[in-house]
Length: 196
Image (cartoon, rainbow, N blue to C red; front, side, top):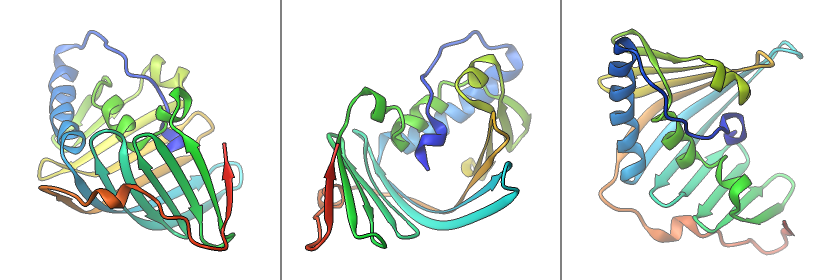
């Protein structure tokens, strides 16, 4: 899921039109990175080569410091900022990785930080687009952010292979605090553990 949105922040000179959109989106995204938040979402992907759709619902709890807990389908992804666990309940296996530079770029909190530095162009009061040479060099043809009541309602990513992934935010709750145990995965007994 998060690997589709890997790219590094860049500072660009904004035109007067997209400066307003970028500042507005930056302010909204900063709220998601500066305090704990719980999001119920739906992820739908159109796979262009196969001409097929896939759809899953999930929940994510984000906290500063690259900490998150994601449940989507039969998968659970947990990170405490130093260790990343990927649990597949169907296959009864867990992949454990240390956070390194390559992996950190694919974390949801990093993605939100990077999007806040992107050069968005406002298309309407509730719809902005990032589409430039820099996004294409990193595999993204187009990134759309849709807003509702000054909150993110959808993020739509079209990659250079023309796959389209839509994240629809069904419920967003900003939390005053969060239980730290949510970001440390307890490996169930009988599960295969693979360390990388």
